Image (tube, rainbow, N blue to C red; front, side):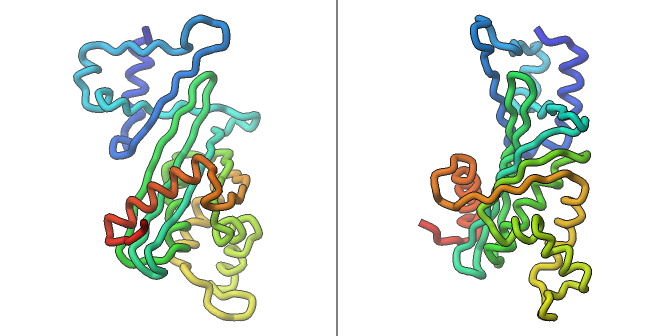
Length: 219
């Protein structure tokens, strides 16, 4: 069974995660005949609502730079543009034989698709409490190019104006997103939307579900 001190550490690290859905996968070692982490809780832990709902905190994997490696998948949706919208994100952590995921989502009654794409990534980065090495996957060229190609930094430097002096849209989201992204090392990956990518499809479902809560009419 797991040491009590380790379980206490897990329990304490759940603070701030309780309203999110967290999934834990235990992966069997090839040929070992047993799982790497036996799940045995005390009676007290079984009665605890947190453990009853299997909210297990993420244990980080360390890379060579001593930073946690995290995969982030995000997507946004909007019924009409502007209109009711939603966003969804998946954070994935790997450590040893185990893979941990956290899903988050939200929405607004009056928004745009680009704002939801930005918000999904912003809220995902806000889950991280220290600098991390991140692989980001998004189907939004607006988000990927704005960050990877430095467009948003240029807009900020020019007082939220584009090179042609026209206003840059969504500075209220780009400003905090730049602030959050600059804390981390991010590797950007653009995905074609609605092309069967499992995590992208999951994020899309989360985003559409939230959009519908605010009156979205997606099929």
